[in-house]
Length: 353
Image (cartoon, rainbow, N blue to C red; front, side, top):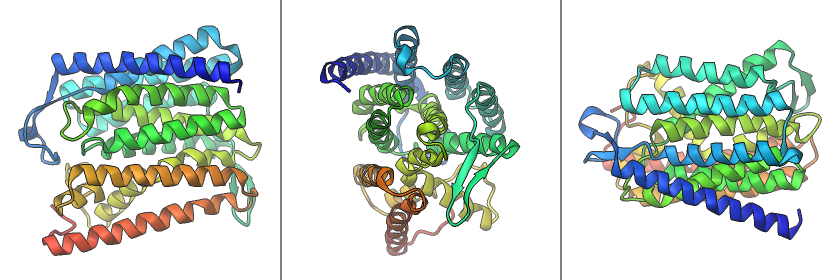
């Protein structure tokens, strides 16, 4: 990429970050309040504005519209491009309504599935998967099922993790910046631009969300970010013919995905109601054991930086070795889990409650 073009892209990203910040300030001034008295799983004690993710959505959608109008070189096929925009806007609208009305989980899931199906219908579907010792497997109709499962899972995982000041905002900002750099190096200009726009939105939002947070992103930000990154993972699969580059985004988000999956599996094994609010994510237990919210958030930022380094290494590995790049990330998360467990014991905390 030429330096002049890079400077122009960064200038446009700064403009989008400024627009995001203005929208976040507006949401602080005319807030949708998150009342801790109505939520058992919250970590704060006073009513705080939410819906700051509106700034993220606005920056991303404006960037995508400009991209569609001006940058032909960065387009996916027309139906895919428009499908991503329409699905993202639909997801944002439902999530914002959820922030206001507080829908039941099943209602959220149906709305998420509808937006995911828009993306799938536009052609963003995993077609093959490369497995260690097996090789490339053509997925056929199973590709639709796996893609839908991935989009719903990633959307909700990011949303579940948004419960502590700055944690998700910072981790996603790092992941998006890394994805933009990786996509530019691979010539994936659509993924590059979309990741850059999402990063710009979070750059405008994050200063208002640092502890003590002036505003939360709400479902409109968390669900939207999870959804867009899930879709970008499918688009990034096109970086290589075997679609193993799909792993780039899950690797960048590994810390968030691990906590969400670990907590979901543990609660299911303990026969807890999965849809019931709780405070037993690893990041919540770390906070409840005495770690400052800034410390927990910074730990996840560190995870994101480490995972970005792994993603850079991933690109240089031979195809047969690429899936194993998750092992160092997994080792770090297991060490974090053991550390949190030790703090829980000292604080007299259990897995339930």
